[in-house]
Structures are given as structure tokens and as C-alpha cells.
Length: 551
Image (cartoon, rainbow, N blue to C red; front, side, top):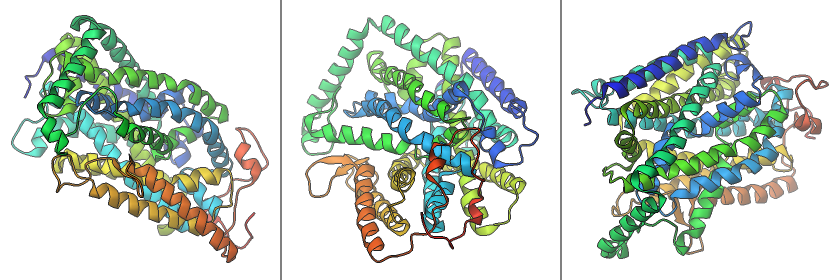
């Protein structure tokens, strides 16, 4: 355990107190007459402009766990570790095309969650419930991993892990999330939106300084890449027999030919999945108009540039001689080793706040799904706007402290394994949501069956993957051999293809049998509507009727 550095700790506490004050003040920012509705509490009034949305979505996607996990992959010598960089590059042209359509139809009909859209488009409560439950399940481990990220920072700072009980050991983490829960309950989405300004500014400063200052201290980029190459070559030589027997994975700067499709499928599958996560869509639906989304799809690649620089910190840690058993500790240890105490404190604050912002948005998104698509749909159909807001506030607390208990009471590997499943699960909602934005041809029961096939195949296949060197373990890799081939690919993408094939085939069958497709409560003009457009009455998704034929 590291000794506590008073300067580091002081700087860290200063920024934590700063964002705490901002979190509580956020309830007065862009103040509405009342926060007692999901539009105000859960979507910030649906009025965020380009600047706020850029920080909000960026703060939501690029998290504390990203800060420690992406460079950790490179530090550990993963040949596919850079996949996160191309996936965030190909992501934005995709969302430029379909997200404005989702914003428009949601704006016209007052949809708060993607499952609201599914209900309105397909007139199917079972399919909407499947999308909602999938979103909640996929988001929970994501929140837990934010705790893993801040846990790493606290451990390096020496203020975590002290005491005999797990409560005493992680008391600082517990306090941080108790404060987060309080100002999120009070201010809703406005709190992480405002705090995201501080979080992203700090991260940009830290990364830019790091990629200039640290290589200069180490002797230049030639030394950084040369040290990484030599370290990986030495490992491969020393462990040649274990690698040949499959008990160890080779290390390298670039993927070998056998991993090319694994690399490509990870990038493509992750790009398709990212904006299926409820927390990503929450930031989109909080935007003021379609143009805000398009502009952000053009501006957000700046974060991809930042991510590329961030990944290189893993190689810098090798060049700096950082030796840790847990690769996730590599970057915090590097920052502490290379920077003066005051700037290390700034860096640790950036990572810590980088956990609070996305955790808040994720808990709000999960709470909105529960409230709109489970509580109101099945438990209290007559719930008022105020009752919806109250329910979401309470559930957001349950989600946060559930994730906190999850991380503190169970091994962190368990959360990481579930996050692997989260990516597999959330991609199975893509056909219903994205294809549904363009055509109503897909049958609701076919989509539900395809979703179930993808979920079962993906979950079971992920379970069967052992950790290298431990044949009896499970959830050891996001990659598996694609059926009928000898090539490895991303499990989520393979499951998605099976999902889509089943949905298409069964759609033709159900349509041929004239099985009821339900009522489509949207019109073609809904998908191009912008703020201020009139002519379509807002529809409550819980008042939908099945009496009229599908359009």
C-alpha cells in the first residue's frame, strides 16, 4: 500500500468538493418551474445545446474505467488493445445517420427511453420490456466498473484498503458515492451535465501534458515504443513453451494475422453497441434539436484523438519501469511516479470525477427504464409525472448503492466479466431500435425471438470462454470461434448476426401467416421532425390502443 501524499490528497479533495457544490447548484442551472417530471429530472428539460451535449456525451462515453482499462490493455501486451480507437472513429458516422431520427420521433411523442419508442413503433409490451430489461442489465455492471476505476485511484493514493472490514477499507469510496447519490437525487441530469465541464477539461489537460512531458522525461517516443517492443519480445521468448501450449497469450504491438478479424469485429461490434446503451441515448434525447446531434457526431471524434493518446500511457508505463500485478494500476502508478505531487493530484481528480459523471448518467438512464417501461407499464399505469419522477429518483439511489455493494462485496473480476456480457446483451437490441427507425417491415414477435436467440447464444458462448492458462474458468475473453469457421470474432457481433437472421426469417413466416403485427403509432414525418414543429399530438405510450391496423 502506498503512503498518503498530503499534497496529492489535498488537490484531489479540492476538486471533489468543487464538483459536489456544482452538483447541488445544478438544480438551479437552466431552472425549470419544477423537476417533478422525467423530462426535467431525467432529461434536463430536453434543452441542451451543442456545447453542453458535447461535454455530456463525451463525459458519458469516456469514463474513469476507460482511463485505466484502455492503457492497461496495452501495458499487458494485448495485441488487440487498440481496438477502442478505431471503434470510436467509425462510431460517429453511424450515429450521424440514425440518432437524429430517434431524437425526432421521441420529441414528437414524448418518449423518454428507447423502450418507449419500441412500444410505440411495434405496439408490443413484451418487446419493450425485453429492451428495457436488457438496458438495465447491461448498464448495472457498467456502473460497477466506474467504481473499479475510482477504487484503483484511491488505492494508489493510499486512502483505500485501510482497516479490517470491507466497509472501513472502502469508506472513502462509500462517501464519494453517497455524495454523488445526494446531488443526483436533487438535480437529476443537470448535475452530471454541469460537472462534465470540469471532468473533461481536467482529462484533456492531464492527457495532453502527459503525452508531451512523460516521453521527454523517458528519452523520447523511440524509447517508449522500443521499451514496449523489447518487453513483449522478452516475454514471448521466455514463455515460448507456454504460448505454444495455449497456457499464455503472446504479446505484441500489433495483432498477428490470426487476430485481424477479431480486432475488426471488436471494433465494429463495439461501435454498433455503444449508442444502444441507455445512458448514451439519454444524452441524445436531452438535446435541444436534431442539429445538436449532427454537430456532436462531427465534433465528438476529438475524444477519439484523446483516446489514442490515452492508450499510449500503457507503453509509457513499461518504459518508465512501472511493475504492478494488476495492469489497471499501471497508469495511476505512472502518473504518481512521473508528475509532481500537485499535478498527480489533478490527474487523480480527473479519473475520480471521470467515474462520478458517467455513474450518475447511467443510474438516471436505468431508473428511467424502470419507471417508464416496468413501473408505469405494469405496476402503476396511472402514475402522474410527479410519481414517475419520484420513482426514478428512488431507483437511481438503489442502482448506485447496488453497484457499490456489488463491487465491494464481490471480486472485481466478476464486474468485469458482467461488463463483457453487457456488450453482448445490449447489441441484441440493435435490430428492433435501429431498423425500426427506417422500416416497420420487421415483425414484433420475430424481433423478440431474434433477441432471445442472440441473448442465449451470446451469454452461453461468453460463459464457455476460459481465461488463458485456467481451463476451468469462465468469461475469459470477448472472443470466440465463429460457428462453421476457424476464425475468432467478437461474441456480441456473432450473436447479433444470428439475432438478425432469425428475425428476418421469422418475419417472412409471420407475415405469410398473417400474424398480427400490432399498430404503428408513428408516422413518416415523425422521424424528420425538429424542435418547434407542430402537427402531431404527444402520445402517452401507456395509452396505446391495438384496435387500428398497422401502417
